[in-house]
Structure formats: structure tokens, C-alpha cells
Length: 196
Length: 68
Figure 1 (cartoon, rainbow over the protein chains, first blue to last red):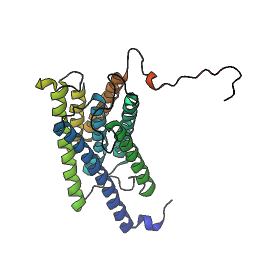
Figure 2 (cartoon, chains in turn cyan, red):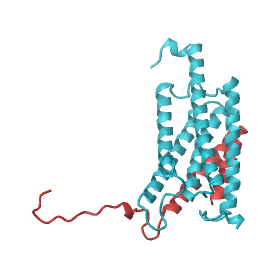
Figure 3 (spheres, rainbow over the protein chains, first blue to last red):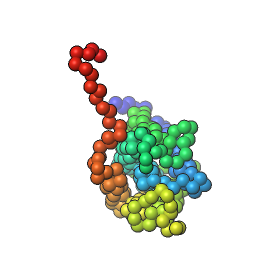
Figure 4 (cartoon, each protein chain N blue to C red):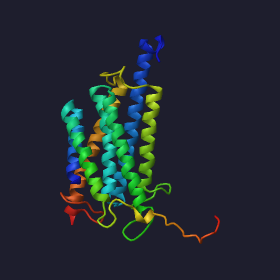
């Protein structure tokens, strides 16, 4: 379904700006969530569990698609990666929620509760929100076929580049942290393996 | 294993940032496969398998003839 207004340059420019704003907002929100998770880890001394780390991997995976859109031009393939990792985040977090939903020896929700909700349950809500956001984006703004290959420009483009560098830096910090926590073996939540 | 996953993930992000599309896709695909493998290994229990018996509800035996 298309009309002449949809193909006009003004309409196309507005669509591109809205698309950039959408991806940038999502990247900034996920970066904020990852920063908060690292804050709990380093300031509160809450060592992340293996499934918690996999949920971080999934969030970085969502960011991968968004960053690829900013750097290499808009493409539905990049968005596809983000949606795949959002689905992976949902699967891991639902399983962890069910794993700890019935407290028993060795199994209980780890870490602090935020507004009474623990991390894996938050992850379920975050993954659902990401998938709903993509659904709304495709419904309202359509796919990126018409914008294929175009990149974010201007002030928004610069902000997107800064946010992308920040997320890559977060991933680098997480990589070092994981090596210190787990070494090259399985991860545990009671100590940093290389610091004992 | 987790360190390897984060290493491959970091590589994917760096390749993506550097505009090396194919390398980035190969790295992120490897990261996803490794993550799925580790997830399945983490949730597998030798006793229960992938089942979750702690959330399984039991069927209450009602006496014959009793109406619900």
C-alpha cells in the first residue's frame, strides 16, 4: 500500500529521521540497562550467574544489529539479528525465571530486586518490550527496504556513533570481567576465579 | 566457554564497526551458536534432563463419583 506522499523526498526524510531515532533510543535504553547491571556487579558486589551473562550477550547481540544499521546503512538483515537475539534473551530469561520461581536449596533469585522484580523477570519484560518495539516499528515505519544502504547523518548520526562506541566499550569491559570471573572454565557466582 | 563467547561477541561488534560485514556476520553467528550451546548445557540436569519437575503440578485423585 503506497501513495505519492510516501515517495516524496520530505516523507522519506521524515521516515529516515524517525527510524534513526527509533534505533538510537533502543540502543541508548539497552546501554543504560547494561550499565546498571554492571553497576550492581561492581558497586554492590553481585557476581553475575552464567544465565545472567548469557542475557547480557543477548542484549549486546541486539545492539550488534542496531550498530550495523548505523555504520553500514539500514538493512532488514541487521534488524533480523537484533530480533533473533531479542528472542534468545526471552528464551533464556523465561527459563531462568522458571528455574528460580520455586525457591529450593541452590535455587533462588540472585541479586537485588528493582521495584520488587528480580533480574531474570526484568529480562523477560525487556525482551518482550524489544520485540513489541520492533513490531510497532515495522507496522508504523515499515521495513528498511526503501532506506537500504542509507546511514544516520547529522547530529543524530554523531550521537549514534558515540552510543555505538560506548556499547562496544561496555562489551570490552564485560569481556575482561568474564575472563577474571570465569577464566577459561565454567562460571560461578561465589568468586572471581582469577582474584582468589 | 563464556570468555570465548564474549571474545567472539566483541570481535563481531568491532568488525561491524569497522565495516567488515562478512567477518562481523560470521562472528555474530558463531556467538549465537556458542551461546545456544552453553545455554542448553547450563539448563540440562543429569537427573531431570530439560524437564522442570519443581513447577509440575500433581493431579489430585478425587474419589470415584465425586463431582467437581
